Image (cartoon, rainbow, N blue to C red; front, side, top):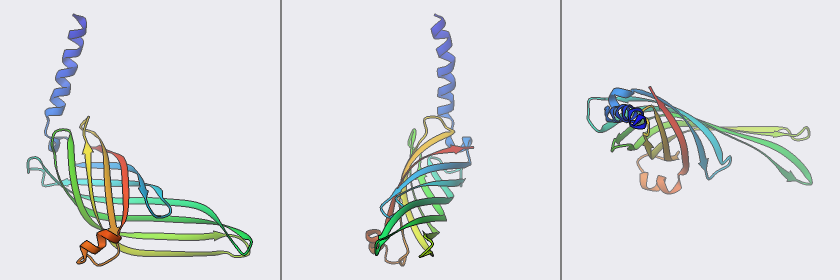
Amino acid sequence: MKFKKTIFPIVIVGLFICALPQKMLAQWSIGASYEIRNEKPKNGFGVRLERDILQKIPVVNLGLRAHFSYFSDKNSFSRNGTTYDSEIKNYDYGLAAIGGVSVGLISPYVGLGLGSNNAKFDVKNASLPGEGSDSNLYWNGFVGAKVSPIPVIKPFVEYRIQSTKEFNKLDQNVNTSNGRLMFGISLAF
């Protein structure tokens, strides 16, 4: 009997929290992700800040996102019998518009945005010091889904493509773009 008296209030509070519209619970979210891509450096981390807009539309989620990703890799290579240590640092940042729907605990979404990609290459060797850098603008498109087991905590998975080519040739850009798979968690407040 005591077990039922303890569980009943917990179940009622849980159902009440799940029944609240997501729009009432959060307008901002901050997240972190582990990111995997095909080019070197292959693994990195990212952060994002999102803001919901137009909260009066039921089921539909519209928002804006700012993101930052960082990749770093150390390696060595040999040339003419000499070994050189090198370090590659790559970071990108950008803004995007997001649209999605809330279907129970799952919220699939898509987005489109612009960003900048910066890469730095540094060779660490006294006989051949050198460094180089590259920076460019790109467009990106992404698709993903958030899961809301608890309204404040939202694990997500996302796939983002980016390209430096012209936006009006979208079909060719998808074939030559750099894809990135992300796993992360967002906190909504």
